[in-house]
Structures are given as structure tokens and as C-alpha cells.
Image (cartoon, rainbow, N blue to C red; front, side):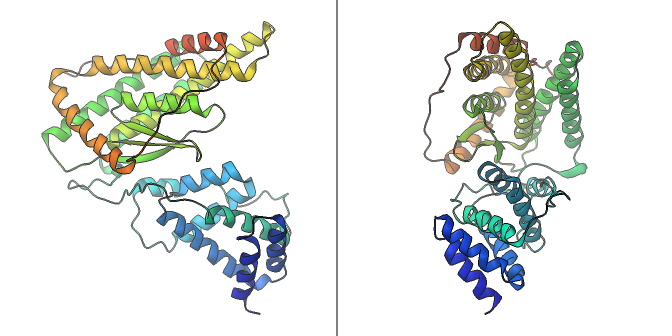
Length: 382
């Protein structure tokens, strides 16, 4: 029997039969035929390539595999993505390449010994998931603007803005890591100042030297637990930075649409605020538990919901103070472009109500933490 026939029989048994019996049958066929390993891997690369054609990106696939399966499947899909990338003939942008560089390690710990049947079972479980991935909105980052920018706006080290973003990222990382509130406040305030200046400078530069730059989009993971409140926080950050966000609850991400510099700001600020919120929530929860309260889940949900709501209000107020008369036409034009791109990607969207917000103490503590979060207005540019 040929290796292709072995894989075909295993697939017929395991991939198109929802029961565990078919999975065991398929794994047994593959385990008994070591010569089929290469063909099995090749088929896996085909599943990965099909996912790309359906609009998925490397980080999206890793995220869904991590949500639905186990670490062994994450390592396996990472290996398949790397193997497929070696002969991927489609041009990919810097954001895609960055996702490839961030893939998790593919090797199992040395203490972990896996028999052939278990390996085959893991591969078939992964292929079942990949086979059923639906079509997503295509975030094509390969389009190049007239000034040579890539579709996601990352221009490599040749453009000075990259050094600015690296500095902002470093400042926020230090603010999140320090145990001294005064130092965190100073670092976060400086990062906010640079972030706002960076965004405004890019908008003014685009208005003065039109280059054909268009809005693009990226996906940002919104991880459980309490993902509804986190999605609200991300939406608030996106709106304040001249972007729009659409949450995909089943697959655990929001698609953020905007101009490249603003997308960078959204990613950095959302991550920083989420870290600040988690730290503040842990401290507030510890204080509540010392007082004898045990409603941990509802406290956290209400805390994060209040935090997202209050931070959104603060960000909106800051955004208004940042807009001077000379910026109004520029920002209006960019807002129209972002809205048009959003409507093309998502012609049909729905709204949802935030659930599980019932703990008054959690809401009060979350609002207090949001008031203390570092969201400082920028100084006006000379």
C-alpha cells in the first residue's frame, strides 16, 4: 500500500467522522506505517496554506489552536507553519514575518516521550481543526503605497518612526515592570506624550506630502477570561486613536482598522492598560478577600467592565483636547477613509450587551483604578 493511500484512509476515518472511533482508527493506520510520515506532514502544510487563502494569519491560527487544543498541537502547528513558509511563493509583509518570528517553540520538552500513536492522534486532531476553519476577512498587507511603505506601515529601520515606536514600547514595558508608582507614572506619561506626538506628526506629514497611504487592519487577541470587558477596553483605545475595532467573540480577537501609526499606538496602549488593569485588580481583590468577600468572578468581571468604561471616557476626553483647528480637516479625511475600509471588511456587524456586571464593589474599584491609569494628554506641538 502506498503512503498516500495510508494517509487517505486515515483521513477518511478520522477527519470526516466526528466520533473518537474514527480518530483511533486513523491514528492506528498512521502509527503502523512510518513511511507515511512525510506525506502526512505535506498534507498538513496544505491545510496551513488553505488557512492563509481563507484569510487566516499565523498568529490567528496559533491562537485558535491554543484555545481549542493543547500545547502539543500548538508546537505541531508552529512546525507546519514554518515548513510551509519555506516555500510560500506569495509576498508577505513585515507584520506577517513578525508573526512567523514569534511562533512558539516546536520541540517538546526532553522529558516528554510521545509514541507514534499519540503523535498521529495529535496530528489528526489538529487537521480536524484546520479543516473546519471558516473564511475570515482578508487583511492583505502586501499592497505598497507610493512612498514605498508596506501595507501594515512598518518600514523597517530606514524610517525614523521605528525608533520612536521602539522607545515607546520600552517606556511602557518599564512602567509595567516597576514596583514604584511614581516611576511608573513618569514612564507612562512620557510614553503617552510620544505616542500622541507620533500619531499627529504622521497625520500632518500625510496631509502635506500625499503618498497614497491607505488604512490597513490588524487582529489583536482578546484572551479569556472576561473577554467582553477586554474587548470594550480595546474598542475604547481604538476609538481614541482614530481607529475602529470589531470583535470576533468565537475566535478570540478584534480586528482593528486604521492608519498604520495609529494601529501601533492601539496595540501598545491596549497592552499597557490591560497590564495596569490586571495589576490593580489583583490588589483590589486581595483587599476585598481580606474583608471576607468571596465573589471573585463577579468582582473581576465588574472591575474590568468599570475600568474599560471609565478609561474609554477619559480617552475620549483626551482625544478631544488634542484636536486643534488645523487638524480637523486632516482627521476628518482620515476618519472617512477608515470608515470606508471598515465597511468593506465588515458590511454587517451587530452590537452586544456587556454581561455579568453585578458587583458594586468591583465596579467602584475598577472605576478608581481607571482614574489612576496613565492616560495623559500630550503637549501641543510647536
